[in-house]
Image (cartoon, rainbow over all chains, first blue to last red):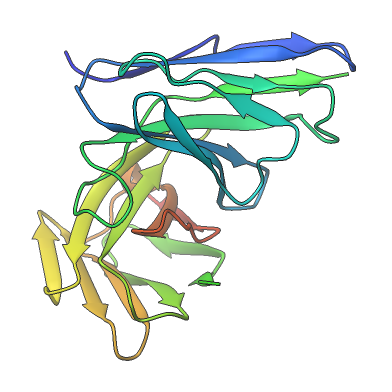
Length: 115
Length: 107
């Protein structure tokens, strides 16, 4: 079955450590996205990529980095520069990006806790 | 900057009731609007996508409408069931989300 896989489901790290969240899709979608969700809040866009080897900053990119070396993979690194990294992270993809009429498909998320 | 607002933040209704969830946005220059459902601790499931040229979309007991001129979309749920309990979010094509409405349907 086609879909988006995020791993791991739960992740624990010590403050000051970088951590990488995995996102893989087998939907053959061009565009991929990373969102952050905090309790009681909507999703905020961290980074997005419309095509391989290209990505753009979203609203809250500071302290995060991404790569898009393969169409199916869009890993997110939470660096030690991110001041408040504990959150629920969601990866999404769409057949085409941004203004195109393509619905978003989501993975099941990774809950990151930094202590 | 586009602002997306969902009111109410939480809603509790008895089973069988029809209900309406609201989504407001400030910039009418949108291409599409999508409604999602999120269960606790899970990702988002797409419910309906309305293109800017459409006024509504229907799927089963769900009906979503879009009024670009007034900056509003509504999600109508008919004959609500306890299984409909979840958080419902709307999103615009520029990937901006509302904070969601947490719906509880009581048996």
